Structures are given as C-alpha cells and as structure tokens.
Image 1 (tube, protein in one colour):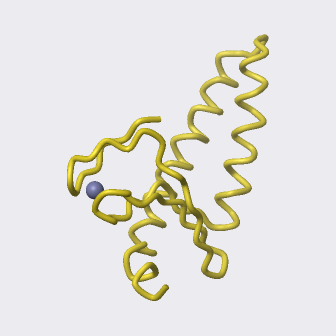
Image 2 (cartoon, protein in one colour):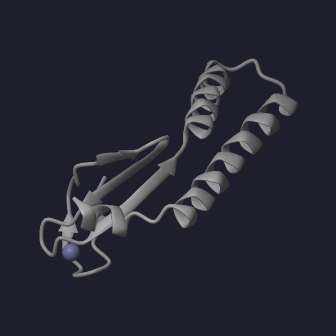
Length: 102
Ligand SMILES: [Zn+2]
C-alpha cells in the first residue's frame, strides 16, 4: 500500500510496519525513510486484539456467504467498535514519547 508522508510529502511505496509493545499495549507504526517521521497505524490492548480476532473470524464467514442481514450488521458494528477503541487507545497511549525513549 502506497503512503504519502504527511511530514515531507515523500511517497513511501511499501512502508515497513513495525510493532512496539509496552505492557499490554501494542503499537503498530511505520517510519518515513526520507524524514524519519513516525506514523501510528493502530494501537491495541489485549482485549481489543481478541475482539479483532473475533471480527476476522466473523468477516471470513461473511465472505463465504449465507449470512443474515442481522449478522452483517453485528459484524459491521464490531468492526466500528474496534476502530473506535483503537482511536481511544491511541489518545491514551501516544506513540511519540515511546519512540524517543528507544
Ligand atoms: Zn517524511
């Protein structure tokens, strides 16, 4: 996936995703080759990682078909809740100070 760096405008054809773990919190991020700026991709805790796993399994069932409208909505809602939770965690656990410590 091609990404354009917000910092310097460099095009990153395939940024390498890195993970950083502090306790239960896991950050996924990438660093711009050109200016060294770090960008957070997602932040998860153990509970959210479990919910993402659940979502992946349910979404796979949808791909196979034969799922009710209600099931679709349930899976969609789970996905939205996971995204929201990840955003919350990103606010609670900013990435930048962790990278400075490295
Ligand atoms: Zn950059």
